Image (cartoon, rainbow, N blue to C red; front, side):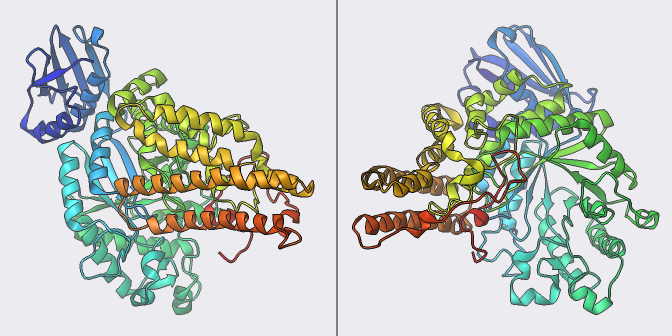
Length: 629
């Protein structure tokens, strides 16, 4: 490994460089025999450009913007030793915004120390903007139920994070909600008067706008940036609740535009430039209320009243064809401005990032954005269904996104080398860990969350079994467990591979449990049932308990403790049900009950319309066939 000694650097980089050199002490040293590194600001370079020049044992890093200086460090760290002496490399970003959005609203509020670790790594990849998506998980002075028992990020924590990010050339901006997705706060009695529906604020109400002004001020106060994301997506049922009782049925476009104009004005009073998710303008113009309906139509009158000084964010993580993204970008331009694009690194509803699908979607969307000249883009990492994911599993996807930002085409080997340099772990192993979801029957990249369904489905009422036939995957999970268990002993972040390794271990012991129990029961094979109880069920119970304990430790290192109780209830429920399996089988084998009705009940496939054996599904659907959760 090549080592570097920072010979000189402008003052604007020194705080960030201290953090990087502390984090990578084996790369950046004080040894005078190391390669000398001089960092120089050069305003003659094009925006978004960094240049690396090597001459013998000396490297000059020329940069225009601070963020690109840190990208340049990442490039240098990934450069083979043999290329250093004659290094001559220039990179220019296709995007002025290379951003990330981390979900801090679905139970997992990232710990500030974990986020700082994350920021250091993504700065070296080339990220220059980060936002934490906070519905109610930020401190609002005077509002004790805002983020109540949810671990909100405090004003002091956010200010400290903004300082830290700024030192690395990263702009942090607030990302909140000012219309929908506010059920966490609207559930409390003091806020009932602000409701239109249980999750949507009441438009055209003075109390509502006093409240919005207060949260905008609180959300933006810790940050240097004068930009703010004010949400407004997925306001399904807007104007149909208390609003309709007060005002009667009104045109949805008019309600949306009137509300947006008022929120825009509140932002302007505080010197802020807002952006919003764009989907409501498309849903309201679609006969099927579909965001991605290319036959969408919007009345010219509605277009005329969309504020032009509010940026619209086109979010799309679902398509693998660049042409589709290009058509949607064109439709956004019909609304009067260039959109900001928001793609996805697929962390949500997963336990490990769906990396193969993330690469596919990023490829398609970034190819389209570059072809269409979209200059601002960021990647979302949502946490739907409880933030069961390890957010650090998104890092290979972020590296892939950044290579798209700085290169016309992406070289997967270069992505891997950069990731391995920044994270100290094997890229292929992290992608391989996505195999907890990308099982052998998956012929092309998919965002199905196979492991979530198989882990949480009831061991006796295994409703996924008729569709998935998961017993075919037992050997797949056994092999994956072995591979990841070996890989997790590597350096850097390799230890995080223990999480998918333990998940694979549980699934290897669970995927055929119900089937084997039923087969032995129908054969009246008491010996086989006894063997399952004494050996296989015991192994499974121990594996689940070990996974629960590891997941708890990983959570406490990564997220605040609030929200873990939701996940722990899931583990507790699974362990209790496995104990019931043991008790029921024991009663049957001892002759205390004459039959096991759970194993006599036939299982049917409710997903016959889905050709793939995998499905994207949540905990509440698979834990029981009952609607009473």
